[in-house]
Length: 232
Image 1: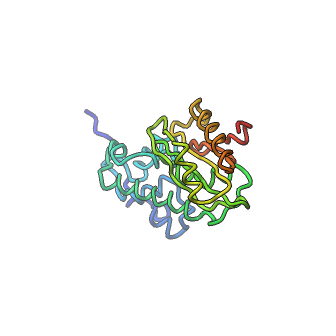
Image 2: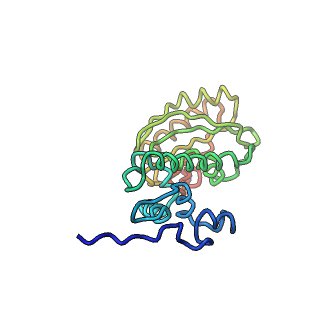
Image 3: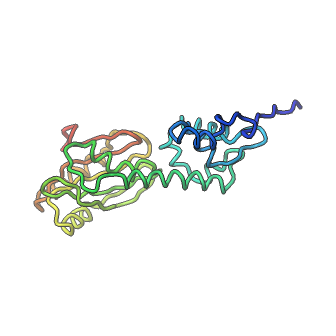
């Protein structure tokens, strides 16, 4: 059997091509996603450098970091050269990135359009491989004053109790709410169950003098707004 061709290890690369040295000399923005992940990995295999191994992992997600963020430790360990420690490092780094995005959001957002809801909830929902349903609380002046998770479901659905939504809104004493959930499948279109639940929440909210302003569905880097589509 012909032996596999040996790769040129990172230590033999030119100084300005090595990821660590490149980061120090040129700054973090100069590095590609695979080079950054290569730094996390630290080492590759006998036939692949850490950067090449990182490229292989990214290729499996079509170079989509959001999709990579959904991978579990066990899924990452399926790649040759990725043991538990390296898999945990990748998962931890991407989780820190997700939390940072959320913390960078302004504390008080005045909602004028659905995209602002998407930007507010995207760090919370985008990387999940299961559905979650949230309610967002808004003041009379349309500023976001808080949010609350209502339910957690599986890959394709979650059951949200309208009574829990109303109870949370009454507890917060807010006049306006927006509900939001994610579709891990990537399908933006609302299901019939989504439409029925939205109508149920709208009808119940009216009786409590609460305004349901929108229902936003997040799927990857896109969103669907019931308000924008005149479904409210």
